[in-house]
Amino acid sequence: MNAAAGLSGNLAIALAAAAAAVAQVAQGKALDRALDLEGQALAGPERAAAQDIAYTACRRLNLLDALALRLMKKPNPSVDYLIRVALSELIDHATDRAHIVVDQAVCAASEIAAGAFKGLVNGVLRSFLREQETLLRELRADEALRLAYPRWWIERVREAWPDRWEAILEQGNRPPSMTLRVNLRRSTVASYAAELAAAGLAARQTGPVALTLARPVPVSRLPGFAEGLVSVQDLGAQWAAHLLCGSLVAARPGDARLRLLDACAAPGGKTAHLLESIDCEMLALDQDEGRVAAIRINLKRLGLSAQCRAADAAVLDTWWDGAPFDLVLLDAPCTASGVVSRHPDAKWLKRVGDLRQLARSQRRLLDALWHVLKPGGKLLYATCSLFPQENNQQIEAWLGQHPDARHLALPLVSTPPGAPQPLLHGVVDQLLPDAAHDGFFYALLGKD
Ligand SMILES: C[S@@+](CC[C@H](N)C(=O)[O-])C[C@H]1O[C@@H](n2cnc3c(N)ncnc32)[C@H](O)[C@@H]1O
Image 1 (cartoon, rainbow, N blue to C red):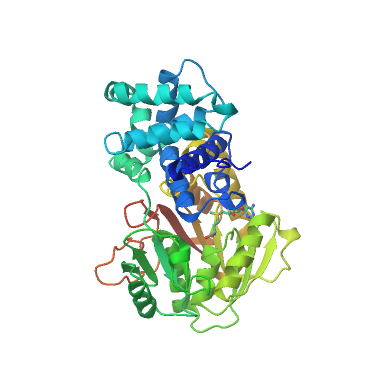
Image 2 (cartoon, rainbow, N blue to C red):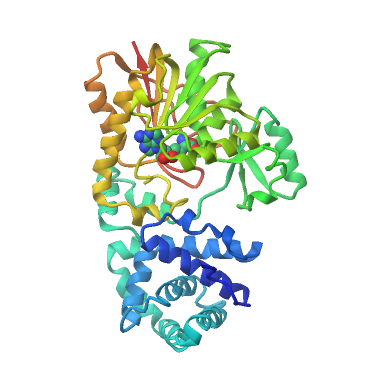
């Protein structure tokens, strides 16, 4: 349904669309899918505003739930989420544009059930404005509401990173930076940086092929995006290809017939980066058919090619022809606890039991994929998680069961002068999220 049909005010349209998306997240849908605004007649600025409002609301969803509970006598499914997203905006704009937010939320409510909820929305939001200081102080006395994470999540991060847990959680609540990966098959970092500057977009080089923008922009504003000059990819995610290629240079320089497997490849960010970096035969697998289509679209835009197949990578007889691979990337399904700033819905959609279940499927994938690697080959295990159960504990336990596996030192990736050094050159490397990049874990495994 078009949540914004019939609305005239820009903010009212954005609030209605954001409310519809956040309501779907509460029902278990991923925010990026819930926010698929293609079917809605939203213009660029309204679409951007709806995204911004929905992401901000998702960062603090438990606080909004608690506020709504305090301010409303009973839930009202028709406007519950309109009230939540409007409250979220009021928290940030209580002094500068509170009256506009209230007016526009009432305008959005007037579209619902012949305006029957206008008074309710108006009353709830105005009560919040009157009592906000006390309300927020009382609610934020609860740690889970102050930090805006589920309790189990806070406990896991505290347990894993006793000296850094609060900073990690706070970082996860900040909007992420926008980093680009220059396609070296079509451009260079220097010439693309010049194109950005000519388009009035400030950026600085932060990795071997990475340019981080001073401010995020829609991809439509990136010069040559449609022509495949660049992709959007977090700096930490770019380390996967650098580490795999770095491990290779020492072992097999210039091997054109290298066989690579990207086992959990969709939507193809790391597949594409590898193909931009080395000449190889690439098989990109993903168990989700729809997401395999996204890999094909991304590769086409970038002028790259790979064999793309939908399959469960752990069930070898459904996809493997018996020819072993030189390199395997296992970018395993995980809790996504390192990328909450980019995917704030992850902390609400995941349950504590998912951690155990995901660790089991990571183990199953590692066990199976070890068979497809050549002796002397390398497997890079990657997650975007901060939880040791999916990372170093997983790898240590797995190594204990695989005497033909060695845990290799990660190659040093040289970074441009002045750029952040994500310190990936140890044996076990956990990249903690910060302003420059998301959180990742990488372990390089060599087969005897
Ligand atoms: C972290 S994402 C991969 C991101 C991707 N490597 C990139 O850089 O764009 C994990 C992917 O694993 C896929 N997946 C999960 N279980 C799988 C399995 N058993 N076999 C193949 N793919 C799987 C999911 O569909 C998801 O697309």
